[in-house]
Image (cartoon, rainbow, N blue to C red; front, side, top):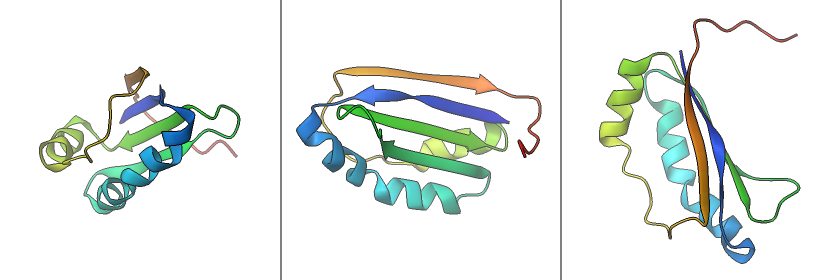
Length: 94
């Protein structure tokens, strides 16, 4: 299982536009074989922060998706902190 998680900082007045630009990509990713979860959302506290999380079945699925993802044309964020995590398993929290 591959987890990609982190955040980006954009100008506060551009944050909602930035998030909305990814709607099509999120919709397509959720329908893609191997995508277990994806979300690109506005932070509930910081008006400049966009939170991102992706969970993929395996590296093969992620690599296939990356070859056809075609993300939106958005301006460069002020800061990016996104990391990839390799997980061996996942179990329900509750």
